[in-house]
Length: 120
Image 1 (cartoon, rainbow, N blue to C red):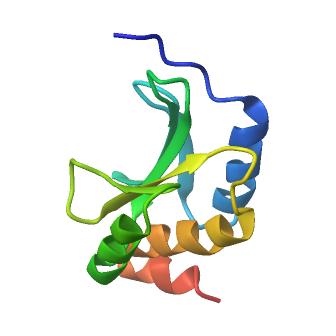
Image 2: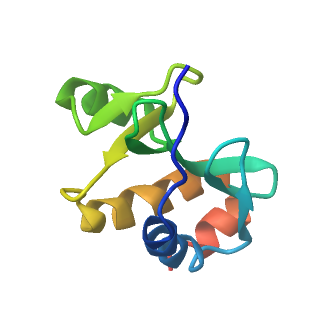
Image 3: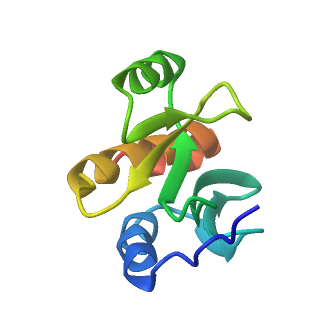
């Protein structure tokens, strides 16, 4: 099994900017990498893989999961939940798209009141 690289701080900083705008979305160290949670629900998780690549996983609506899976790289379907998808992070990452996808993940995971507060 290979070593997992630490996620570069500049990647975490860019993600932090997105999550800091969401009510009660807290950043914490995960078993590997960094995750953001609302109450006890994980919204997203960024980590380095054993292959040296960086990934972020997040939640999506069921129809979107299938769409992301069919798009292929940089997207992939998570193997541990029906609504988990991920994206490889590299120099070609579409950060505008992530700024749309990650708040959607938050709204899926957050209690209704917080999710409603995040849409305005």
